[in-house]
Length: 174
Image (cartoon, rainbow, N blue to C red; front, side):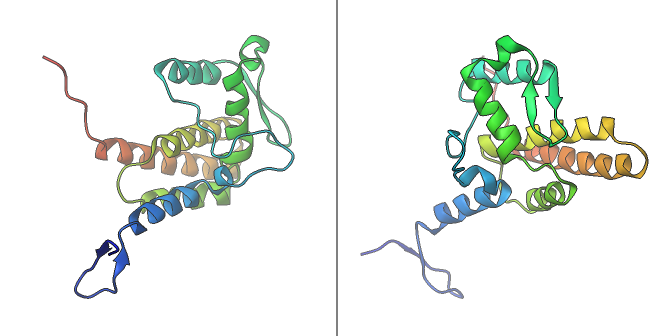
């Protein structure tokens, strides 16, 4: 017999539905991560951080001099860092996954504000990279555009802060 979760006022729902719903929420936050690109060898749903060394490498990428071309493609100027295998995942996430327009960043912020629970590691990573991109655009914008980018930056910051406040705190070992 199938596992069913039934609420007295609702129709029966298959127990696997929460997983499908969880995938849908992830896809809604970063839909480009789940769409294969024909012209690219980029893996589907790329992730940068799967170890402490990779977390440190991500910070090295962010601290290195990045270049954003007129067509909004992000690249790492340091040739040694740019030649690393993880640098191609970094470029794929930055160039093909994270939103780069104000409307897309606003949609992400709205989705994050109504997101139940804590973000998955890859969604947190992508949101942090979107925050870094938005900070760069805020710094380079002028006049009215600067205020628009700054508002988007603030919204993303609040979403990440809210997620961190909901995350369980690791306990210190005695």
